[in-house]
Length: 603
Image (tube, rainbow, N blue to C red):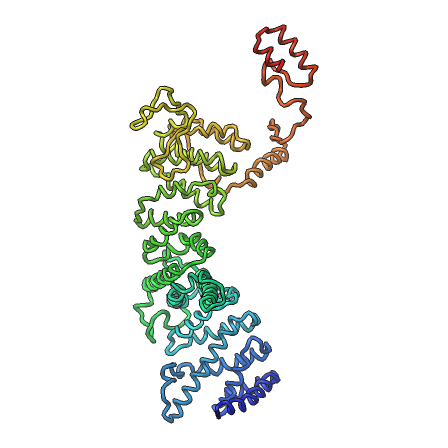
């Protein structure tokens, strides 16, 4: 019972001390700093100054206290014992007691600097100074060694922050991520943190909200797991943001790496000339980069992060990995998901197949299944369509596959926007030019006497019926004529109806034709089609070019029509009021006594 009373007695004293600290002036804080730096007799000023390192403290007092404490600890860093040594028994040794006290105060300072750097309540000035002081402690380790323990503690807090870390990441990117050793230890720490997050999120809270909500213990635990899962999503976002802010290192260039610490990435406390070479540093950086990204990709990524990773993995991740083929499992799983995820995974998978020897037998079947109207309106359609054209460029592509893709694309042309129809025409043009054996599909006429092969020999093909099944996912079972091309000649968009005429050329003669660049059409939309038409019209008028301009198609009549059809469209027919009908009847009877024509007019 004595301990609570003593604690209660001590509480008013601590409150008074805090109130005295809050009432201190700038001159008093400066005086405390000078006395702390002058003699060990004033060591008790350190806790007082540490109490001022708070996001809510006055800015001028916090800055002065931080500068004084940094000046005090920098010369003592080599003599500060490790946490394990400081935790041991001092045995009455004054130096060991002082070392243990110094270790505790230094840990408090590091924790205060991390809080000042990350807190959204911190002023930009104190955040900048606190980060610089923290990185100086990382740099000024024993014998010039990189203080990875302090840096790991900082990154661990950064990943587990629930507030936005974007301001701090901007500072890190501008000042420190251009140093090779900081990038190296960033990847090392993120590898450890990601593995720790993976062990916490796997199997924990996945079915958090499926155990009922009746107020029972299970319901409460489900809610706790739900909160933990949401925090885990925030942590995964933070890991990705840190990885994204580390600049991509071009390992192809032969350039020297700049180091923040004296020793660099060496784990020893002395410089090793054999480990200062650019080749060694590249090898170590690639290894840590690969481990960090693999650990991150094993996490249950939220959908938005998943899409961002797939959108940039072929540019920012694959070129810097020690063994890019190790990403095959991640990319093939993503490619098998379907929809937008598969479209975005195609870039990375294509690089692994063409540059790193990955074999994926069902690649073209999956690619064929991805061709849906939604692809031509997706955000990343430009990259996908360019890759589609590249994948179909090989001269070793079987003719049945080329024919199946041409038919699938021509059918899609009937349901996509005009910009998508333009891309499809360009893709079919390139397919017909690369594979002359499938050109007969454009003008394939079915003989009425032809019969189906093998099992359907007894059934006669129906003239005008298309055997193509748009729901079939196997390209080997898809094939038919490209009758949709003739439909595009009557497309409501003038751009499409004009462009489809390019398919009327003899594409089998490669010397007289050229391939179309898909990049010229892949970013098209309704806006681009409209702009091309309007701007072309205005450009002609602004330049005063004397040429006949076709009238713009209108959705209304210039004069009010008196009938639905014009008489010239149907010889022998007249459309209008009753008087004209009677007159037309007499004219028809006089010119032609055919009963059928008389019946039509009378009707």
